Amino acid sequence: KRKMILDLDTGIDDSLAIAYALGAPDVDLIGIIGSYGNVLVEPGGQNSLKILELLGHTDIPVYLGESHSSTSDHFDRMQVSADIHGENGIGQVELPDPKRSIEKESGVDFLIDAVHKYGKDLTLVPTGPMTNLAAAIKKAPEIATEIGNVTFMGGALTVPGNVTAYAEANINQDAEAANAVLTSPLHSTMVGLDVTLRTLLTKKETQQWRDLGTVAGEKFADIVDYYIQAYVDVNDNLGGCALHDPLAVGVALDPSFVTTIDLNMVVNYNKETYGRTIGDDNRLNEPTNVKVSVAVDKDRYLKTFMEYLTALFKEN
Ligand code: BDR
Ligand code: CA
Image (tube, rainbow, N blue to C red; front, top):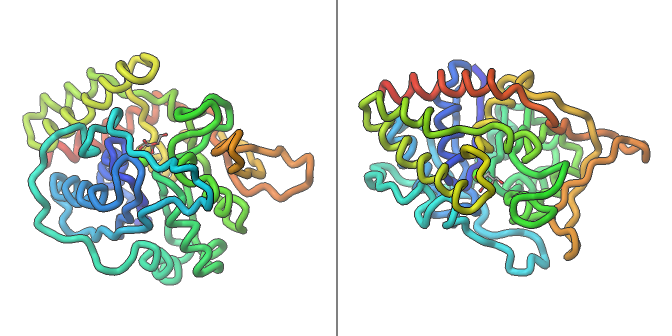
């Protein structure tokens, strides 16, 4: 089984990423690191604990990472996404207070230790800002080449972004951290808006979870229906909600869900184009460092997604 760490700002689609990792047969989820974004870091960590408990996994530790953007001049851009994810981050759905607590060790140290321990056997999936990963690489630069696989949700090769004309939300929280990660020796796979906005879930699928008649099925249907409604109200009506974060977990496990191109990526953090992820196709002879997803087999992905999640919700 593949050792995996999720770095999340939990969040509705982050909750789906947890469910996907728990439902996948070949994953050993060794820990969750909390980030800020959809909600602040502390409630985000609590949400991760609640979702794990709802899904019957009270054995997976949750750590907190950094609570703020590391971008030196971040123009007060830290924002929570109450309009999309609800004030509590999980669509205003009430879940019982978790019986467990957040771990005392910092998420950044947990990540560094895990890379030292598992090296190439470790997969990291960041689906929030890159602040924690950047901090870990700064503290222990060797991890950039020791880690096996980093597949992140973030960025938009083709604009527009979903926060500004240029920026996707995760990168927009901390563009300087994202740039530090992408310009480090680390190799990664980017799952950005180019593919996630083409991978949608509708109320047809959430109804199937509701019909299971289990607590997990009903709660997840309520949580995700909130998100689907937000996509109708706030975003252009795409016909469903985007499976941003669970797609990144899917691609980490099975890269053949997407088509990628190898690019040298940087992230702008000047005021005008803050958060823009720019790909250079090597005309400047810079080594390529990111496999950027540009197309997705959404039908096959959705089939796998529903298989994993439905089986998990059935049991809980
Ligand atoms: C990303 O931003 C967050 O709101 C979502 O959880 C996802 O990680 C999409 O831009
Ligand atoms: Ca997220």
